[in-house]
Length: 229
Image (tube, rainbow, N blue to C red):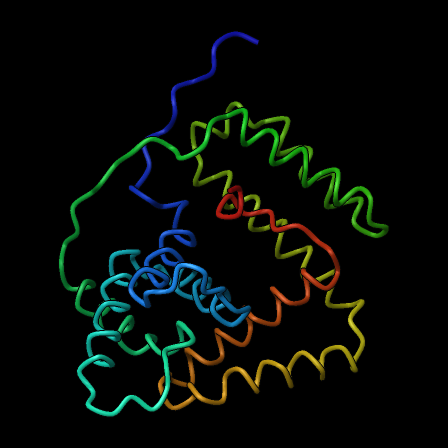
């Protein structure tokens, strides 16, 4: 099919948002084998969706750990990113008033990797009854992948729209008992950090946690390019 088009210029580390934060948190915490919890992943997603710059998150993590290490009495270890929520918000507010330089880099994946990712998700969706329409929508994106690769923002928007529809379908199939169980698990994880976050932050975090857990429970794939790796 001819040569592959040149990779589009894109903000540095844009699609590595999740892995950059995970690796930095593990490094600063000093435990490379530390596993992120569902709450941690949901929190990263709220930052991503809110447009919090990656640098603000990394600086916030550093600041939170510096404060923790300065304490004479450390009652417990830092076992969740939620501990850093306030510091990340503060860094984001500081950076919002500063014009950030435009860092450009090549897309972190090739056109072939995008095609394989879409094909895998199409296969998974097609195998689950009730999601045929969404699989068809994903096939339309795949058919235009060569063109959309030149505008990854547009591709990401279309994939996000499909994922939102997928969540809506999955939610209609969720029982009240399942929802109650997940909310109870969320509350147990979130309780120690409620005082560290605003009501708006908590509401966004709850939404992301419930959606992520719902998709995992239903065996549904994530469609966003953020999950390509």
